[in-house]
Structures are given as structure tokens and as C-alpha cells.
Length: 630
Image (cartoon, rainbow, N blue to C red; front, side):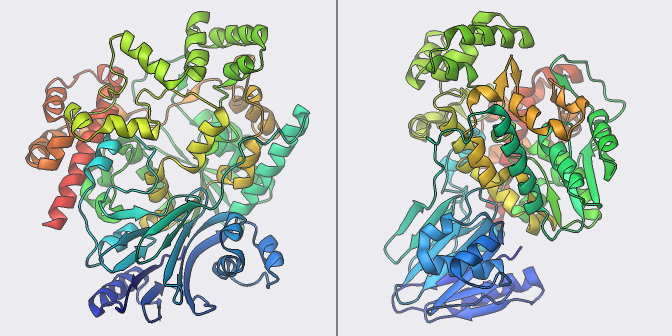
């Protein structure tokens, strides 16, 4: 990864010596003095490697292209030139059209001295990060958020509305960050900045009306396999040692199996396990131990090396969140669940891996569960098939037919306004978030969140409705921007890059054309992916209908943190901003009524695992920002 930063001044001004010196100091710390400074009259770019320039422009890019040979041939240049140079050549030749043709991970900055225009862009999945601030007569940008925050003149105040959305788990915002005056370049977005304004535009959009690529199911299965094989090969290009975050689910296990099938001999699977002495009741819908399916995977593919990790207690980054904030300048989306992964990340980092593969995007792509299948049958007028499929779903879930039709049909096809009306008729507030969040109820009105949520089409009750392709495309390419930011900064946070074969754009475009009724059939969710991976996964994984419960011992970790949470409440209440955003009285009540029995704590996961833990963590983040600013 090649992070970069830069500064542009408008009018007759040039970057001040203080601003430039600060940027230089930042990059010197980041790269031990090994970086390059390139200047024009009104701009300065800092990169860890020397980038070429053309037509009097400054250019910097962090790129890993999947279709570099195709792009080089189209441009008529040598394929041996670097990916950053290919990105620049493509952009110089045909602008947005060329950016849309780039596959892989990239972010870049381009300064046109003659036009006085700065162009910033980011790949379609947001696999590289890029942030910027427009100040009085200048704009400063950086691919690593802590670097941008360290530049003089860049504000570090929290955006109160964005903070409230974070607490409410509203992940629909694209450009605004948690910091007032700092924007991100969102996925599949190009930003053209001039002295007067910033023009934000999509350079690419998924085609949501594309017909299925094939009429026969077996051809759709074969094409899914082909594209996934290519996606794994792309992610492992020039990677001699492969590390895979592996669970007993389809997505990550298929990555490990495919890597082994492609002849990679050095593959280590890192799997988290619950402690042996953890008291967990059996569940017909959930399994807790990933060891049996992962060991079955290794028996089928002997090239796989297994490394089991059992996280215990509090990880230092969870015990002292301030250390985490110093590293990424952002809070964790799900702090207690992220804390579970820290032990796995420690093991990977200790083993010296530079690239780690995971299957984070799979649930919205190849292994989509098909939750809109009944709605798809209804739209096609297949009502007898609909009733038969609903009956099968009810049998699998042990639910009556009426409930299945309500949850899997009405909630998928009924307009948002009608669903909100039904919620009100049941005596509930459709905008209430109290069942999973400790956002202060007063903030709903004082910050105008109801209006924001209507504009954003955010549903606090997570009702998923509308066109399935549009819904999935939004999840794949537009939402969860803060999670994309943190993931994209992983090389600077952990020293290794996270790659996901399921995030291959060509694979995802194909998955959006697969009929919804193939994703769930005979009441079986993920029917399609079971067919695609039938040639590489063991029966223990293919036939599993339950979901794996990662971080099964979260309640033990939260219990261990109880004293820290109790000690933090006074500090949170003392912060005017935190006190306005967080329902501190409720936080105190939850701590006072803390269940002594771990099983009782597990039964109240919405309040404690999600609401209380996130509120306390975010309150600490607010205090960290305020202390830095002071």
C-alpha cells in the first residue's frame, strides 16, 4: 500500500511553509524518511514512491489493479509499468470513463495546474481510503485519516449529527465523516475540487436491469465458479504466503479451498474458537464451535494449515480504547465484536503476513440468502409456488405460515409508509432505536434525525424492502462507508492488507443478475452458493443450515469490562456533547441492573452487547477527541 497526502492553495497563494513542513513531518514518520515531495506553483504532493507526471499535472495513487493487462493493452502502454502509472494514464486519456473500467483497489489525486482543479477518486468498493478538507483558500487531502487530522488548519471537532447517526447504526451517509469539515471520497465516487466548489459524482453504477447471463441453472452455477476462481487468483497475485480468516461458513472456507485448489502451498487458516469451559446452551439455529467444519475443510484440502485462536478476557485495544483511537482516529463499529477479532489479528501480525483474505462481502453477493424470493414469486404471479415455498420456509424455521408471509412477503413488498403506519397502529414509534441503541431520545428531535432518516431511507427496524437488486447494490457499493474506511486503512493500522475475493466487481455484477429464486429454494437459504461450492467444500459445511456464532463469549468479555464502564460514566456525563447524544440515565440504570447470571446477560444482547457497549465506547471516543483538541 502506498499512502499519499497533498495540499493545494487557490488564488495567488502557495502552500505555506508551516503546512508543508507539517505534511513532510507526517510522511517522514510514516515512511522513516523514505518519501518524495513534488511541487507545482500551487500544490505539493507527498508520496512514498516517485510517481510520474504528465501534461504539467501532479499525480499520486495507491492502486492494485485486477485487470492491468487489459488496461495496458487498451492504452497502448507496457504492462510492466506500475499500477499507479496505469491509473494515471487511463485518467489522462478519457477521465471518468477510464476510471469506470478499472477493476481492483485504488484511490488517486490529480492536480491540473492550468485548470486549477484537484480530482480525487476511489474504487467502487472503497478498498482504498481517501479524505479531504476544504479550508479558507486551500484544500488538504490524505489517504490516512490520522495524517489529515495532524495538519494545521484541519478541524478536529465532531459532527454531532453524524455522531448521532453512528449511535443509531445509520450507515447510509456517504460523504460526511464523524469530523465536521472533513469529507471522505466515497466508493465509486470522483470529486472535482476547485476554488469555488466541490463537484461530487458517480463515475460508475451497477446495471440493475440486466437480464440473467444464462437461461440454464447449471450455466449460472458454472459461471459463478469461474468468476470466483478468478477473483481468488487476482487477490493472491504475487502473494507467496496466504493467510485466510476462516470460519465454518461458505465465504471464507471457499476462499481457502480455492487457494488450495489453485496450487498455493503456503496457506494458513486463522480461526477463532470459544473457550472450552464456556457455558453455552445448544441452539437449533446456531452453532458455536468452528473447529469441526474447519477441520473437515482441511481434511478435504491437506495443503491448508490450521491455526486456532481462543480469545480470552479483554484485549488491550478494548480495555484501553484510547490506544485504538490513536491508531485509526475512529471508533469501532461494533466494539465488543471487533475486540474478539483483535486476538486473531495479533496472531496474523506475529506470523508476518502482508496480505490476509476474508469473505466480508460474500453475504451480499455470491452467498446471498434470497430473502426476497417470495416477493419475486409474487411479482411474477406465481402464487401457488409462493405458498409452497412459504410452507417450506416455515418448516425450516418452525414458524406458522402467517408469520412467514408477514415477515418474508409483506415486509419486502409493502411501501415504507404503509409499514410505518402499521408500526404506529401497534403503538410503537417507527423511528425509535432504544431496543439496540442508547442514543438520547431528545436527539431525535433536536437534530432532526427523523427528517434525515426519511431522506436517507434509513429504517431503524432493519426492514428490508423494495427491489432486491437495488437493495443489495446499495449494501455492496454505497453503505457502511466508515467500515470501508477502517478496513482500507488496515495496512497502516496492522501492517497487512485485507483483501476479499467476494468483493470482485465482475463477480458482484454477475451475482446481481442471478434470479432471486435461486438464492433460496425449497426453504433453504443460500441454495445457489451451495451449488457453486459443491465441488470444493465438505458436506459438514455444505449441509449446515445453522449460522455460526462468532464471539460466542461476548458476555464474559463485557462482564470483565464492567468496572471500566462504571468508571467511564461520570466522564461521559461531564462531556456536554456526549451527554446530549447518549442517554446517560439509561446507561446508569443498565449498569445498576447488570445481570449477575451470564445467561441473563446473553438474553439482553440488544441492550448490553449493542446498546450499552457501543454507547460507552463512543462516549470514550468523544472524550478522546475533546482531550486532543484541548
